[in-house]
Length: 104
Image 1 (cartoon, rainbow, N blue to C red):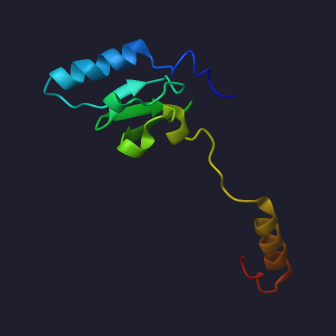
Image 2 (image 1 turned 45 degrees about the horizontal axis):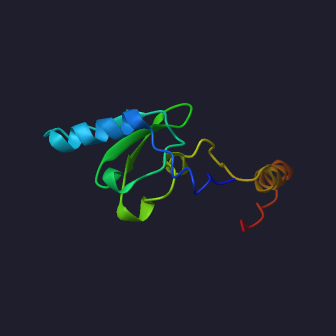
């Protein structure tokens, strides 16, 4: 469910302050954040963020196409390693001594 248009996009005030401080300064170190629900605004373009995915920090360089999306969309929390059906068939064929079925 999206946020009400009346309320506007949610932007973490502390994160926006860090971006503004970085624009005034010379250092361009990545900004570490846990605020995955923060909406990317045009002020974030050209900055690098380290977004926490629950286990580690994912590096994200913000481009123009990302404006309007959430930071968390670019730091996946789950790793898909494939369906177990193909591996089970290959293991059964290897155990039977036959050739492995072709992968699809």
